[in-house]
Length: 481
Image (cartoon, rainbow, N blue to C red; front, side):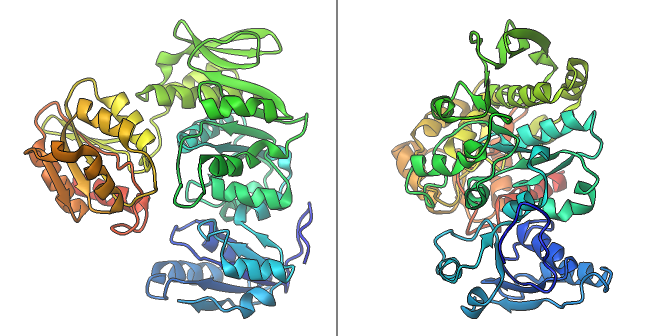
């Protein structure tokens, strides 16, 4: 079966879904539901066991039973705890979970047999008009920028849909998508790799920044950045791209774009299109005409990194035609995104922040810069290694952190080496659970201190994923007396 630029006829086609996933509306489970309802003959294969996927299997079974039997007509076949070569040699289509390595021998087998391999995102791009899609990528700030832009556009387009790398596949929202609104997608490097296969990019693309990340998956930052470039690589002159002028990598990319280019920056720049700060005001410039949008003080979130996120979203909103009065209203009301520098509560004068999605040293550095006015932070960090450089964040920890709790893992071992003998102090501990981390952090903190979960590392090993890590922290903080 070939992939077309219009609605695909999936009825009775043999489709293998590789990776069911663990998120309730994530890529694998959402693709499976969509395919079943489209009448496809679906095989779901996952290296996890039925016991590990028990909750997902229950959700899937309930959803399928609730479908109109006249629209589906085929049961799902499950191959769990393993992959069978036959499922990749005889299928009409493979839908891979973004977490599946692109170098998988099973995907290579499918391609050898000329079977199309897609993700939920590339399949979605084939089903929906590209002019309805706005994509956001970058190492940091994707979720905040995506969510803020969604709130902006929703003020004039009530049918707007948000999805992608924020644990919610757009395929899970097809009934809403069919109503015709804009679709705002957060796109990771893995999702963007799949757009290269179909040679499509969003109509409006936002690139927040590039920092070293996923170097346990990519050969280096250039390889990682190349995957990200798919967000604008297949645009035309009728499209728009918004790039960070303050980031060395994205600034360099400006010469590579074909679409109408806009910049965003915390500093004023001359002549070119974009959004910037001048005298505390957000200014938008397009084709030589400048417009003051509002004061940056309208943004309620702390930190220069969040100001940059806001500028990127405002730039897209202005291109889309949102009036400044509406932008100002949304900025005043926007409280941020869960798991991203999220203030959970204040107990006995101590504030607890959940920043679990800070899985890189640069992200944790930004969190410390945003919150650390003096040495009053007790930091919970550490975890699984991604092959990143800890030197800068360690320097910031020494400056802003009064107590350090590290979650066990390969990344923690590297952090300890970076600190050397300086960790031989009373306010340091290494722990094997989030419960121990919160308990120890609480013992280190005093009134007017901050306890911050901002790991600078991946979550694998001790947690299912970074959201599980954040959920455990949130529940423990909620239970504190």
